[in-house]
Length: 113
Length: 115
Image 1 (spheres, each protein chain N blue to C red):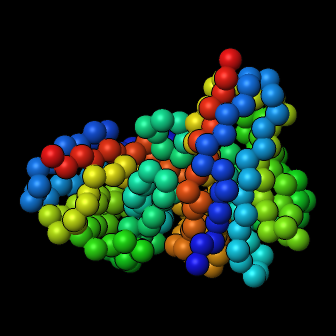
Image 2: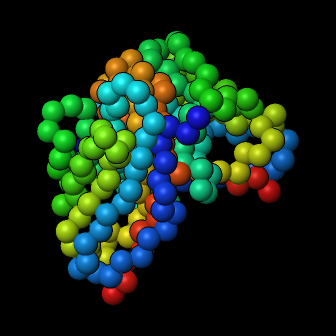
């Protein structure tokens, strides 16, 4: 069963516009959620993570994500996108332990000048 | 600087050949992982190791082998039995490996192409 779904394969936004990338998960207990970013031909860099507590999580590069248990979502947001944010973004879920990490298929972000 | 290195960045292999991808970390992490990335499919776990001289199969281990003789190193061999090896391979590490709060850190990846 699909644990993490990123509904948008590709999103295009204008530089300076706001951004929201969607992530939905399926898991009955408390999920441990991550957002990673990958520039072309590079490895993954951790943007932020949610384990417990405050449902609004701040990350690096001005990103934030909000955990909504009622909607099984962990959407990534940024108020104003920069051209350097163009990359692929992955949402991930740890269910039982670190050996069972599930990644979404990714959302590719294009930034228009 | 602490981090994870993978070499080579690009690798070409003829069909029927085995090839080994290198992964080294100087983060003093106990756990290491190998993932395969294909377009539109996210990352899939090949093998993981929580401690030296021990490793476990992930979701797609067939056609791959690993070793963990040193804490810092976790090489992946793509054997001729792997039917579709062309992909981007990512190595990761984490402090412990048995906790779901443990964050994985990734290397820059190796792109393998079978000619």
